[in-house]
Image 1 (cartoon, rainbow, N blue to C red):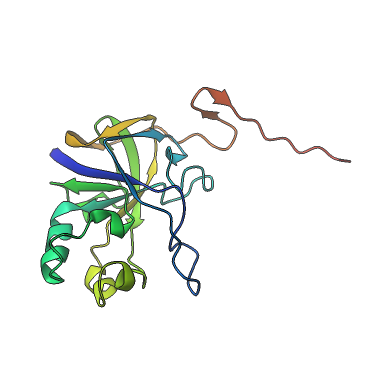
Image 2 (tube, one colour):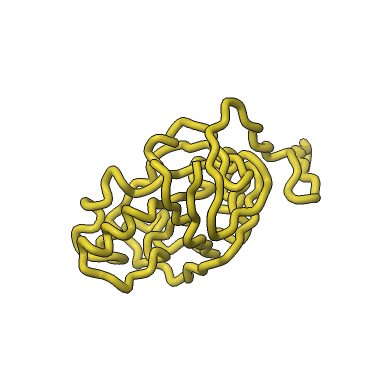
Length: 186
């Protein structure tokens, strides 16, 4: 299936995650033309890169048509998709259908793990009522299953019967081997 990736975002820090009662953080969301994906780790440069082994939200996808509908519903024609704090804006794909599926985009394999549920911060970042409006259409959370590069523009989305499993904590990150050891008496 042909899809398009109009925008890709990364952010070096958390503005909302784990901050239910604290004020929002001030880490910028940065739009990039390409991003390096690392199996089992996420997107290089993003706040969830290496967050924890097997984390289900190493990358998030958001439907371009839902973003356009959001802008119309809340009369925000100039709002940036970056305020949603999702990584990849994608057109031409039913993200809900990818939950529980392994798929690839542009040759990079992912495992769709669940909906990227909106939180109350959407009412502040977008507009009052955005959290409720986004329920059921907040996007897709996924794990990265293979190393590769995503770039804006046209790409091919393929459903995979079998895909590689991400490397665990004792694996390879780029070209650096990582080994964890526990020593007694230290």
